[in-house]
Length: 466
Image 1 (spheres, rainbow, N blue to C red):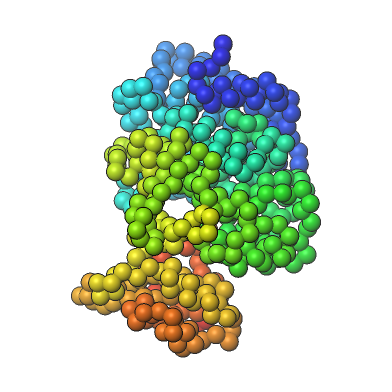
Image 2: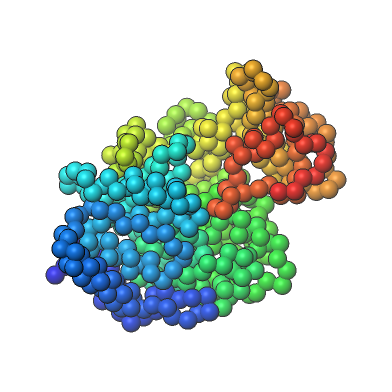
């Protein structure tokens, strides 16, 4: 009987078409699961669960939560299929999330089993990084997940003749949409990798003949610094998401590997938003045009930069357990990022929370960073605000830069004064060997503000490690 769930219906077509063909490979190129093997494993798990419930004389209720907290493993597709058939809500949790936090997320998600969802029961909860201690989940139905998968694959021209290289976490929204869903809904096989060492990734890309690499900026930057890199003749598509991609890194990668990097911009709440189809832009923060099926408009069309309003069939139904309908709902999502129109697309210029309050004037860190990056020898710049002192409510502008040895703080301050307003010029500039990032390759301005607070701050002229 044909499934009523659109993702299961898509899987049935994938299974009929690809059957005994390889679906999941390891980094040695060995087949871990065929498409038929994924189905057989899912059915075996379902049988085991049914027998256990029968022994306990327990009748399962729909919308209970099934959490999964594993690395990039061959069991991901089967586990998701089991949840779809049991009408459970799937909750991916990253391996790096501590037990107390994962327990808290599961506790919140478990309320789904006693919630009246009407005619819109969720299939998936995405765990987002909120600003409070209470976990916040985004709820999705299969229709929305399938829409996101189709929009991504059609825009990026990814098909079942490709081979995805899966080193980004499948538990994250990016990995779920670009690795797991294309396998289930469109038959795109993938390599599963848990080795995030840059040299190992390059070797595995070459060994497996992967054609599509969904990566992050920290990978591409590391690739550029490796000598004696292997040839990658089969790699046809390099994608970068999760954090802004430096134009300098994109340029260096192209010079070294003769392959463009395509910036991809999305959010947990709505899936893919924009994509740089050409991969040739040297504009900082450029993320290209809206992907197919997505509408993007500036909330404040009169401003040079603004938050955006995203509309598409892939937008989640809302937050859980506490909704925020002004931000997410009815097919619309408003991210906290600030975007500006650039060429034929958009570029990211900052976030609402990043604006620095200097004596009542709002300073956009991106404008200061752009000025610093124009100075010869500066390879990276991050600008943030910190408290101007005890008892003072306003902030001061501070910057961290990665620069050539000959560059000094005084040189940079003089250069900033030539192109910025007085209140935009940094109070202090720290020159570092590397700017620290988290496990997703993202830089936290808040973490830097805490590290370089006005109390006990490091000497501005000393080159600092990460």
